[in-house]
Image 1: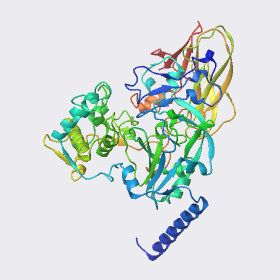
Image 2: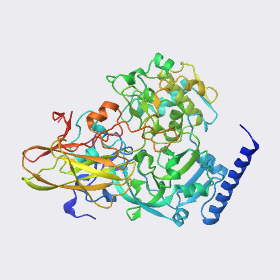
Image 3: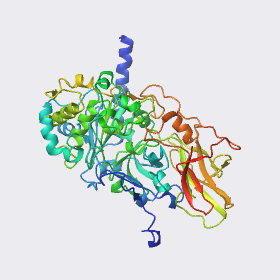
Image 4: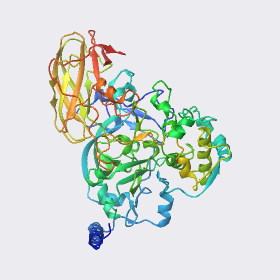
Length: 223
Length: 363
């Protein structure tokens, strides 16, 4: 709730922060310079899960197929099924997974392999990585619309969008709502070294340091 | 350079494990090392998009995002700032990954060789963030970005930055970082898996949510038996391994041997290491050699007289939080066998009556 009291503390904090900043600048004068807006725009290309950083643009599944066959299929296979270099991007997801946001095959230990679209929960990840790292031999050489179109093609191969779909910055949030494993990630574990995801839980194994005549199973496996 | 008689002591690739040399891994020869420092020439390697040798005069580090003013630093400028030097281990979270389901590889170089320990020198990241006027209250996460072919990125916890533990290193074991370790700048994230130690570091962005980058949303996620993927698993939990005797070695005759190995914890110092020579029925505490440092390798030793009979040798580490390294049975009971990353189970080596040492698992 807003109050003058809070506003006072907020401005006091801001003032302290500003003062500390100026002080440090004075402590290490001449080290570093202010980045230009052009430099930041050129370097800061990451796209977050909330799509902050996503440039405007669009691309069709059909265009994506053209780009795919000329620049991606050599390593990833014509249908993203994998190739000489890459592991599979496509397959293992069902219409029911798209409805629920959990990939059933991940619960099935007998299902062979895990494709990218079985695992990934965030569409931003796919867009960001293709944009920053692909093609392998010429990273960052795709245009923004080519990235949209390749992502549209991969979504189509996985049955997430229809054949005549056009993916854009306007509808990408709706498509995020159809990602097959969008509800499949958990941060409820003890292996993040802070409280940024909420209260840390306890380690999930609890061995006890027994010293003598401990119970063990001495039958060797797979030796 | 090492003696020509030591030419067998080198890092090794695992044929068939990866498809390209530009995105691959090589393993450190733990069985041949002493103390806690890994010589830079045999330090394990992991590349995500190429091995680069960047001209330091052209390299820049940018700090942007939730900051008062985005800043750019040259390497020379970073080297003018107050420097810290600290020993830390770096372990790939996929270390021992091939052993989740069953015994897969013969030697400690391949079971545990994706760990190394060095003295790193550099500037605390908090200093650089403060120089840019970072909003440390609302900026809960930072993105670290490298200058490899993929501009590889990872989300870094602000709590570790605020603690002053994280630093931007240019030095390793007394010399400049080597190209395979990220020359000229690398992020040092003590206790956290190696993938977060971004090499060729070129940009730090302060933000208020995690970034779900490729290496924390498609890879480096830990599949659990219920089909959920654990995301942002980062800490390397307490672990140890006996490096001599270990798989592939041969004890020539019975008698005295020094059992030696390494222990570490991403949560702090190693407090105790126990060793068993009878498959875990009885344990003796090993000697911890100095120095025992937080989030660094710790060397342990134990006297042993081999009677010539089959013997299963294991080590079990405990860290200062009281956490005890788990058995395979305990680990699999909670995580199954498909989580790929963060296998910190107790390792077993079988010394056969002919003196040959084999990698085994107790079910």
